[in-house]
Length: 273
Image (cartoon, rainbow, N blue to C red):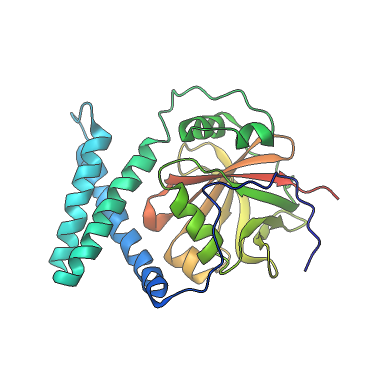
């Protein structure tokens, strides 16, 4: 294994996951996750259009959560699920509400960014709205200036932070904790780093308009790199901006669960030789 030169401090927080042998129940949950995410995302998208359309007024996010719950349950009932499906319907309905809340926790475009200029400041953030506001206020990194290896850390912010940590550290590897990203010398491609094993989960990297606010970001596209599950099926995409030299703030999301709007924030710090 490669020697580790950790830059970010080791912490025990909500992103900690344990590498325990998976049970049959764990495998079943893993099979259900894509279906749950897709149904919830479809319901949330439709609910958002209903609840935030013209004349929606105040309480739009709350109505969106409630409407998503009803739509998700109706979709599953309409699919012929009976007693066993009731549990799944409740899970999907709850997830739909949590996704809506996680999106609401991004804050509005007028939310003021915090004063933060290094990795320690990012790790000290306690509000997802602050992290997203700082991301909005930051520029895309200089083209090609992100080559090499970067140490990564999830920010435990937002109601879905524990779910993001579970997916990132247990399913994404799989069975090995995520530790950062590595980019090619020309910056056009890369892969994720894990505590065990070689780099994997490839992506294509380029400066492109953000799917969240339309401004330039360093976009990491997993479908373009040919990742079948995480890219083509789930539509994983990371969008990064530079907070300080050698420090990137990213928003990661999957099309299957709402895209970058339903983001998991993370930090990348350039590794030193």
